[in-house]
Amino acid sequence: MNVLVINAGSSSLKYQLMNVETQETLAIGICEKVGSEDSFHKYGLDGAEQLDETPLKDHDDAMALVIEALVSGPTKALDSLAEIDAVGHRVVQGGQYYPISTLIDDEAISKISELSVLAPLHNPPALMGINACKNHMPHVPMVAVFDTSFFQTLEPSAYMYPLPYELFEKHGIRKYGMHGTSHRYVSERGADFLGIPGEKARIITLHLGNGCSASAVKEGKAIDTSMGLTPLDGLMMGTRCGAIDPAIVPFMMECENLNTDEVNNLMNKKSGLLGISGVSNDLRSVQEAAEAGNERALLAIDMYAKAVKKYVGIYLAALGGADGIVFTAGIGENSAMMRAKILEGLEGLGIVIDAEKNAVRGKERFISTDDSPIKVMVIPTNEEYMIARDTFEIVSAL
Ligand code: AMP
Picture 1 (cartoon, protein in one colour):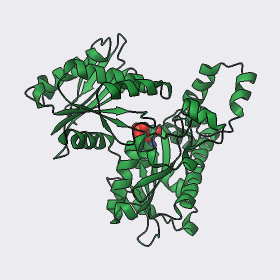
Picture 2 (cartoon, protein in one colour):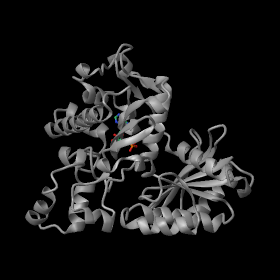
Picture 3 (tube, helix red, strand yellow):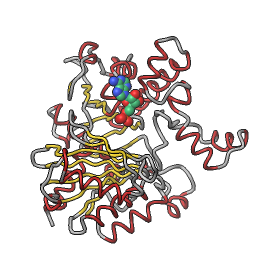
Picture 4 (cartoon, protein in one colour):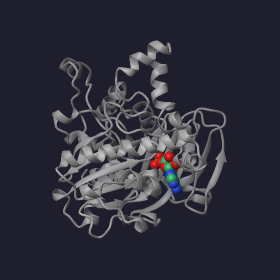
């Protein structure tokens, strides 16, 4: 089955065409700056990338371009659109409605729209992607795969905030968690890699990219995660502050004379590695600056590592120990320095890193010593595959 995986952002449309049975990627690309004059389409498999600079006024225009590149020209992967069997959409917020992925029908569209209050930056663009596909491929079944679904197994004691209960009842204020598709994938792969059946494994998953989150997975089910009502909570990130004393928010608004949008922007776009280092949100640049003696860059790296280390401790307690810890996403997969810093000094808890294995670059691998009681793994995430697999399962059952 060929599944087109779509990840639509406010000004972007990312896609991957996969054959689910062979796990082969047939086509890949992204339309960026959609809605502006200087939009472009970057596409093509490794070594054969193409770039088209062309104005795309909306996601519908972008989808037309994507379809053209799938069925014609140098990146042609299909003879006709009829070879696309299903479309899988990444949707950030599924609220309490969707503990698993769902077929997209009118009711799902209206629920995703209703949930835009909880994810104003993410659900509306996902709907634009869904509508664009509907316009161009009206008869192809579509599935929504939610970032929040994996965390619908959390107990109320893990997802409730100690605020007046009515706020949960009236506005749905609770922890939803994000990056769930990634945590689900790497926790499954982690259990496989450990040779432990998923329903017996206790795994801590660390998704460390520009956005960062940690989760505790027991017997295949998430029991806690660091992101909350929004993706701002938990770990320090590229530009997001993560968890801070909540009283700082009204304090900053008063002393810096900020309105709600401005304070939100400050915490989401100007904080984290960027805010502390003053250099960049990109760890590679922050690390270069730190190596050149920049004190604030050094501080940013130390703070980042400490925030993740803290969550390792919290989740060891929540799980009552762990069989494995998985690092994934840009920083988790690539930064040996950061992995070592996060786990240094945890030998007493049974986490022993092998410096040589940690330094090796590669695909799925162990980076702990053979006799480390808790095994540490690097597992590249593959959210697109999970979206394609869920889509395949739901559409096959129709
Ligand atoms: P992602 O959001 O998963 O694409 O991750 C982006 C983050 O990964 C950025 O902070 C990058 O600096 C970081 N990253 C990517 N490659 C490397 C690398 N080789 N070494 C250190 N950090 C990296």
